[in-house]
Image (cartoon, rainbow over all chains, first blue to last red; front, side, top):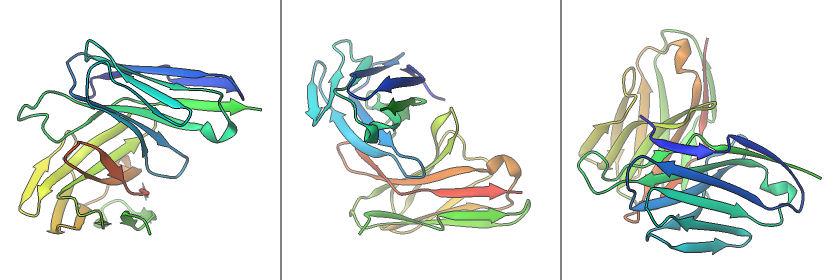
Length: 115
Length: 111
């Protein structure tokens, strides 16, 4: 079952504010991914992280692979209305028979942006 | 054109009916996946396939079956649909960097 804890579950923010969310795992991960899902659509990949400590940006989005390899963070700066949606973290653990080629997903953070 | 397509996008059916959801991809990836999404539960893996001759169960495979007809095609079947299989279903492909790319989803309602 799911082993990723993603928080917060939801957040209501005003346009222009910065947003932060995070994911923690009970085990070490080799890969962290962040996705965004718009209503009625499939998740879209935002950022992929492969090394502990890695900090990667994609426009106003910045994500970090935690030093302990058990967590990851996503920040959205200067939010705009189109940032509304559900953001998911996903990760892959060490290359064991059980985890190889599979991702574990967080339950998602619902972001609502008000004007 | 979308890299990962799913048909149908919406389906309403009755308990006991057999349903097939289809997925096609043009990304050239060997790995394909089927997920189910329920509110508040995120994405749960149903089945996955690493190549045409490889099929593996995920965490919630009971009541589902799959067929990998070709590298580009992976279908999901519900042999006898039940109401608690009402959900959003997503197909995904993966490259060797573990990045997964999702289709637009199928909304299935079982009455």
